[in-house]
Image 1 (cartoon, rainbow over the protein chains, first blue to last red):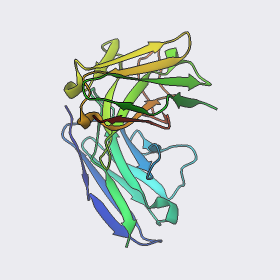
Image 2 (spheres, rainbow over the protein chains, first blue to last red):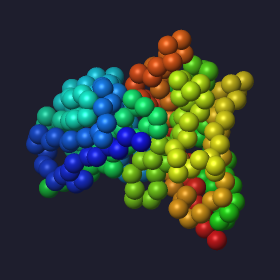
Image 3 (spheres, each protein chain N blue to C red):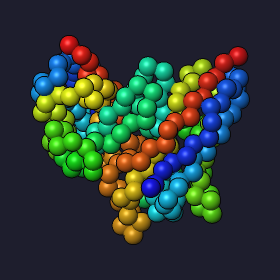
Length: 107
Length: 126
């Protein structure tokens, strides 16, 4: 199985900050990588698919990059709505696997 | 508007089985395979299973094989997840999700999981 490792596990930031979350795959997943945002008590929401494609309706301050085994999610200017937990997920091969999550909290 | 409608919360005793349903509204199940993901309290997301076009069958995560069965009724566009031999470790919110960009002819996913159900809480307690 492909293991997905995110860093950091927790990130403390302020409104307006630029934040970056990393995701590393244990094997090559090409660009079959998605990022999700999850707020407490809610279902995950797709933000980025195919590593760098922005899902419809997601603000342009959110971006994704990378391919192969190294990926990054960036929020250029953190807004109040962005304090949440973020997960990466590979869908290159079965079984699909998620990273352990990164919580963005108020500094 | 496409949405996934899940059945209500369940409380089960250890050793019992649970069946959760997931109705796809506004789209066709045959064109958009359902995956199941669960989340234990305070934990991350665990992919449970979904359709593998290369296998032509549903694939399950290794640690649930033998206890998990996923089925689909295309006549009602409803998917089902049944988990048997429940323990306290199975206490979680169970989500169904799908990829509306899935291409049946090529057998390829596009978005990963772009539409999610609201989740069904399953509590296992004696």
